[in-house]
Length: 436
Image 1: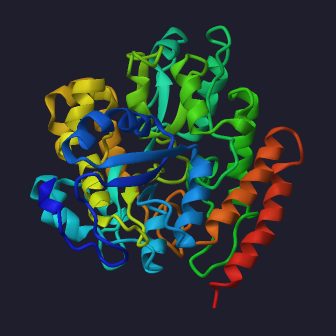
Image 2: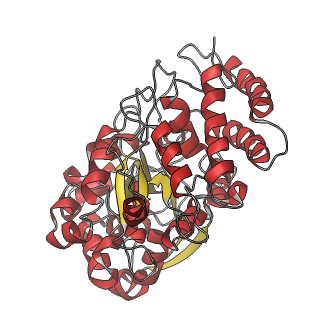
């Protein structure tokens, strides 16, 4: 890591990075982040003398907290996990350090090894890197191979949503207490609407047309959302309106659901026998479709450095380590190769130990990332880049508000059509700012 010391940081704050430094890191509470918290003290801190103070929050709380801190220039954190939605917007607002100078100065980091789709998603319009990926992901369908086999069901490699709904009905109750499928119902633009927007896309819908006409209550958007809600209500997990990524991961890993459509990054946890009862029993296929050839999203949880940091070099040392080949090897040896934060480097998929541990899902993850179409995710041109989000600042509030009304419909309080008619009004207000 000494190779990055003294590298340019792109403005804002003092450099820092010497013995005895301390940095504050804000990150989402996913399994990979819990792992790095466990490993930091005896490795990174021991080697560099830099103390890392972690704040770990659930996804919705993390998004609120990091937006508040960075947008208001509060300067409470030196590093934060953000993703493909935030990077282009926040870099344009000059809220983030560029990271090319640090990554280029540390030859052992091997920036060229990073997957092109992930790099592009974490770069500004001019190609400057503003986020170092911790792990990358698309989305796919996870299913219990043993349960489907017992029921005489064959899962297609590229299923349609109609096929998935039919299978969910057949395997609902296949084992005591087992439901057919888990789909996120927890309100939030990055919770419920991550999977749901991919369903909207492949059903032929969109949030906005290329010329900023709101389409939230268009027939295709309504059809997709009604399908999603009806499937959850008929064959989904109990308490779906409170179920996000973490709750669905728990339900799948504990054998409470037969299928789950979500992030490819979940597979490592499902295949870890230390935390999963279904390790070795899960199959993985491409994200379900209807009108499009593919529908998987593209995302990376990445380390970003706010311009307000007073510890730029220390923060950069941490980020380079946390996104390095060295860290992947550490996780593999200490915690198990299935738990490596993958989906960001080509070389990861050539490591013999990882290939063996990820045999069930590794290739499918890589193919899903490469097939994701952030510039063309549906059947019509879009006004911004993004599969599961619209890359404008207002989408964070818009998506969350609409998801709240859809979650209410899941519990029988109102209907999906009423929720989307209300959402259309909100979307029209947003569109009016861009249409001209």
